[in-house]
Image (cartoon, rainbow, N blue to C red; front, side, top):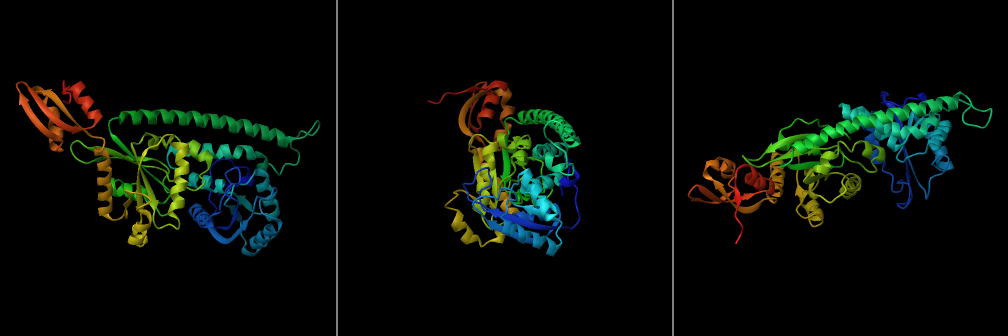
Length: 436
């Protein structure tokens, strides 16, 4: 876990078998600052489990607004204090975002470490970051989050900011730390900008290929579907945020038709803004996609909640509307007919699949192919006989509808995309025959 009491602002370190109490404050949806809404201790428990903690207690409270000093009301705070003592808990995790002062006050009262929702998610991302890009992105998000909270790291120094004659080592060290963190943040942004430039070059090199991005709530089964469709070996584990890096594989349908399939990082309810910002380079694949395949866990308690959470994050990442294919995965965990009746009318054209079933992967692949072919149009072109080899791929995919030879020219009616049409006309000496 991130140990702020030791003043460490870098990567997380694991505490084996840490005893954790979950706390959630239910606030009105309209409450400002993104804190509104119901707390979800079930999801928070899964996050703690992913981070390596052991849950020993739960506590929640319904309030119109958080208590300014300790987020919880006085009576609930006393109840939490007793729960910490009775269970021997070493960590309390809130399913809300705490201000630096609130975190400091809670630690003083409870005498255990306090983490809020954002800190916990950042800790999990740090634990799972394996590539250089992911590590840089996570460190950037952590430092951006910790920068305004530096004062909390220096509570052991009595003399801090004050008037004339009160300046002490606390303030000096704080200012030094702020400068160092700001310098490191600038370095991280520069490094990520360079990575993003390289990635954009890679994306441009794929122009003309149909691009599909798997998106969805974390642990919805995107990586399992990716492996089933492409035969790739993407890391799969039944936990939140098992994979952080985008993985792209080419899927060859026939001699002419192929598409790129990308598995992306999973989303979550109230995904911290700093993470969304720092992971925008990774999510470039989503912005460049021709089709987003939105994978939903059919076996979760509230699929609609997952769908809305993903859509909210997408609004930050993808500025324009994109073609989307809905896919409900893990249908083996529900009553299929009842589930279909509930969601089929709400999301027409949805696929209902079980990623571990080979037929499901084939069905979804065919669905993607249908979308790809939807970009194809019928055109008649004239091609010099000397360049007929350029039509061979269209013959093998059954896309030559008619063909007629007239002297040294072949007139062919083809089903093809606009990109393929332009390539034939510009590179192979073809000519478009106007429609009558």
